[in-house]
Length: 276
Image (spheres, helix red, strand yellow):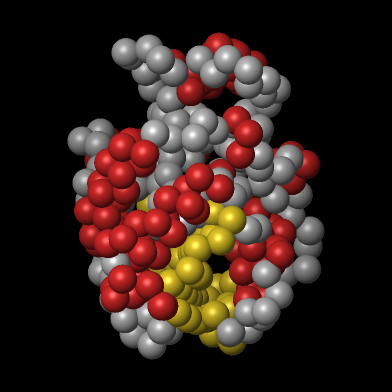
């Protein structure tokens, strides 16, 4: 395990749910149902759904609960879903009770930071995370907590996009509320104008940095360095997975090979890492 300290400006920021509006119930339900379907596409990007049979599974950034529910239905012994947004945790708890009573005794959801879990040290078989790592502030700290919770040889399975320097790496915030989003537009206009565009569309919100918007700006090499220094070995990695992706993905896959363009054409990462 590399003992060198990984540092990045994002480490100085903590996520706050205050900037995110509480979703309407109907919109939450629509989003959840889409995520249930998207779970199949998500696992295909890893080459297939992992074997969760009899395993203790923890999800970071579980959102409305779709992927945690998928793991429980697939035979996990216990599933714990964590998220920092309370309204999403409340929705996940309700949807399991209402629609999935057969697995309700094997799944639980908590509004909780992974750093604050101490009762599961060395007891988790698999930690999963979907479209969350690009939002994590202090990735080195979180990876150390993940490693602490995993049993020896346990797996971290995470896929996330878009990375910040890719065409829509700001999640479209530079053109929020506008019909047209410009590829790499956030890099062209700069961070300050991205933040201003977000604040304008969210009266009462006063963000001062893209980090406060939950965008950590980490590049592929930053993530790989953080995995290594936290004590993980990469079992597999896919970059710019094409299943269900934009038709532009093959072009971006080609552009990644052009010197100087890798960061701007790396949209997603799908990583399986093992605790060593």
